[in-house]
Length: 100
Image (cartoon, rainbow, N blue to C red; front, top):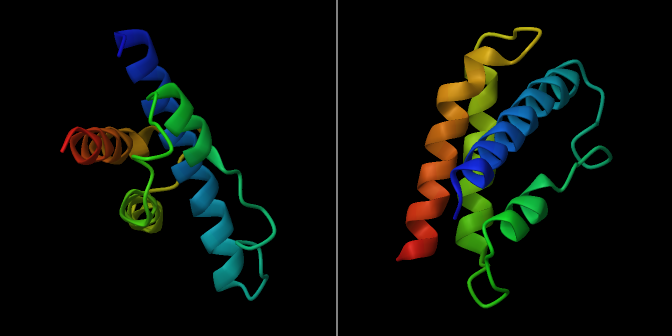
């Protein structure tokens, strides 16, 4: 995978984490949002990582979801910069699981 794709995937994960901060914040206020405003970015990531349908599994999706739920532990910033380390960790974990 190219370095350009790697950075693009990390940026997408970071934006999804930022989106999750908003969605989970709305949920805490009693506004059901997670079921209505899902971006499906994981499917785009699968495409960018050239993951075949045989390699897609619930464990990958659950791992990604676990990282998304960690977004609320990070400071909310306009650019989402605080989420960059978490996005990188998520990317490298997915990459590791795919290469198993």
